[in-house]
Image (cartoon, rainbow, N blue to C red; front, side, top):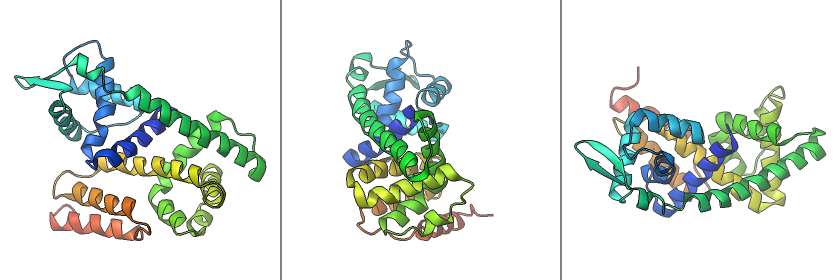
Length: 248
């Protein structure tokens, strides 16, 4: 996961806060890739590759089609004979770069403080190239459980991370530390965690309202002062799948 990917995750959460529409949160990322393309014709396979190359996000075909419909409603695209075309003048006004710069500044602050923490608390001489993959590893394996755990001010799940997975443990330890010393960094990291959860929801089945139910649970969780325990999310997904015959 590159800096661009983590930046994209933060932008997803910022967009979500503005519109509270899950797929619409992806529109500016997708439009930015379309805007950079020299062709006015939108090719789904090429767009998927561009999004992956630029932001490290793999958006499945069906959600991508829905995102393009959202973009068309906003005037970024037009559809003729079943083909989407880019409205260049409107896409050029999307303002993505300004949002990207703001988010990158926030992420740079997180990285700088994480590197300092690794040195002072764990005697590690981390560089930027060490810190970014460490955050990636943490997000991949611990986003949901540690979001709840840290909100409730406990190190229980942090202590469960094997010390052999040292990078993840250090990131979790860092978050627990800043929770009591640097509320702003905690809030900034919280944005990235929640953006990661939004991105991962794209991979849920689009039938039986499994994805919709998960997104609704995330919405309630994001807005709650004390979110429900993570097993509630897992149970909701299992129940939704069983109801539609998707659990085997």
